[in-house]
Length: 610
Ligand code: SF4
Image (cartoon, rainbow, N blue to C red; front, side):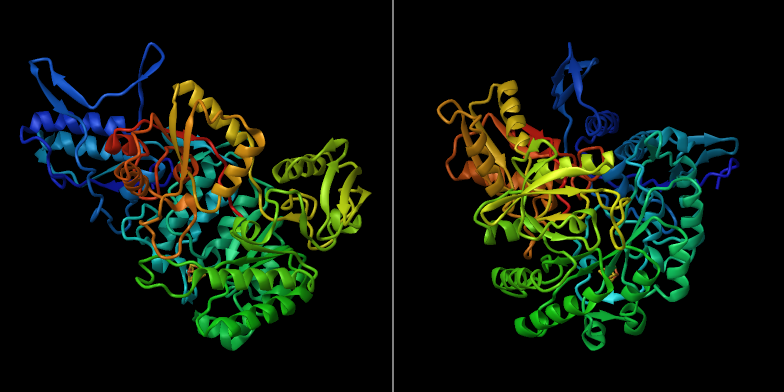
């Protein structure tokens, strides 16, 4: 902690760890400085982007040196009780720039102190105020740093399948050290001004397993009234804890409860305390805390027992009025299992079929995530504003809406698709006045009046943006197709390769047909889906693709005999975790263009959470 009481962010410095591209150490120093700079800036001249891949020394104008070498490995840089440079590569690469610049300079000079040469093994940030970033103002930006440990051990824990070079790392530190960091983060957290200290998320575990969690939540509540969203296994949700949390509202609990059977829960989740975890829904209901039950059906004993348990679990917990059931379709990476664990289509299809059946039987809404899978496989028409469930006692449920209703108009505005309907509902909720809504039920159009002030538990206007209406995910915004057209026109491209994902591609193609903005006689537009080799297993989410997956796919596209495209367009979301356009390994997206020689542009998209 500094004299001013701030936590000091300290990083290790590894000198001499990288293989040089040039043996002349002074040339190599300049190369590394330029390479590191070009990972965080884009040069411009006269307002236009300029790309550079080499340099000349003024003393040796006849010789050209290349800037980019093999990407230096960040392996072996973690040090106990220090921050992680690998993590900074994703969230604050200016710290990597400092590390690389210092290492490059220290390869040719030694620093001197009063007593002679000083050996340097790390560096610290002088002042946290230099490192403020735009913030969404979510309290999780402070207390999320408590989620560094877990109190259970799920057999399918997603962290067991993490590749070794993922940037989402945080070295083990003492709880007191983490508290000092969170208190400093809290000091600079300004939700009203939309500012916070730079993020440094590692692997997210269980915040309620952190010994000082109540201290940090109480301090946060003095600063913001925004809801706390807490992810938990429920193992810490004793009556005392639930009572303490209830006094800190508004909050929303994502309760991971994979089974209502104590025996199955104990087999799926080692170190479980079924007597505490299974009692948590009733306690949360008693204390008026809205919560979702998040569960992963895992076919460890075969499909039939898994489906039976899913049915029993949802039917059982429905009596305690969860705000929502989130059924996560089971996923694993090649690091979790190098051989297929189950028939992906069969298992996902069977789970969604069961979810669709259960929606007819229980009161609380159920979503199967990723929602685009269900819609593409089971619905005739995608992106419709159809209601699949209603939060009990929400304004929408109390107004008489029904699962299956198709939203036709909100207020006086006709609805074209799902994202638009959700935007209109969010506006109506913020407005707070009763309004009419037209829905199609069967063949008939009905008008209902929704009063945003008419609600009861578990609905909570602090956490529910759509008045209790649950749809099959966020849907797809057709403006992405317009943005793609603008990008193509701006770049004057005639042959474009658009890299999508298995789940989004059908939506994109629908929107392209519907909007008809791209003239196929003028522009060749190839839409392809890169394979997720980095994570492997049955991972199909586009947001989990990394730079190397895109490079491999473009090379493969060219190797199949396709002519070199003028432009490759990639949705921005695989590079959207931090603000610096890095993939999950901390690698900049510009590496795709550097490796393939094909111009690459990102298409700005929202991350799909559902
Ligand atoms: S609760 Fe989450 S972090 Fe903890 S073991 Fe289970 S999946 Fe992993």
